[in-house]
Amino acid sequence: MTSLTLVRRIRARPQIVFDAVTTAEGIAQWWGPDAGPVLIAECDPRVGGRYRVRFRRLEGSEHESSGEFLEIVPPEKVVMSWRWKSGAEDPNESRVEITLRPIPEGTELTFTHAQLRDEESRRSHEEGWTGALRKLEAWLENSAQR
Image (tube, rainbow, N blue to C red):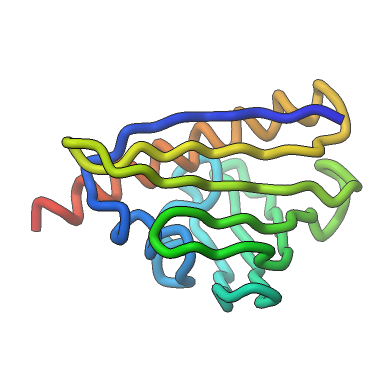
């Protein structure tokens, strides 16, 4: 098993970032590695609550993941299980942890995806999450300017 960790500095308060990662409305804006649309975003952000997200990549493939919220500490931390619906991307259940820390310019987001099957899965997830977090940053910065 392997893991990846990404750190981003986002120009938005922790509560705004927390809402973006724990609400269907927020997730619908940034989930997925490229500019393709989120087709389904369902979210019940409480310990034991479930989420489900389906997105379409620009090249046309669709991907769906779901899981359970394992820990919620507003606006500091979200831990959830992760499983791909088809299992083609990685057949195992893994774990996503997002921690948010206030910094002068907004929020430092630390994103860890652990318990990935192997290095190939880690590389694929790193590419996908890098794109998704780029979208999250851009969306929150554009939202703040309105």
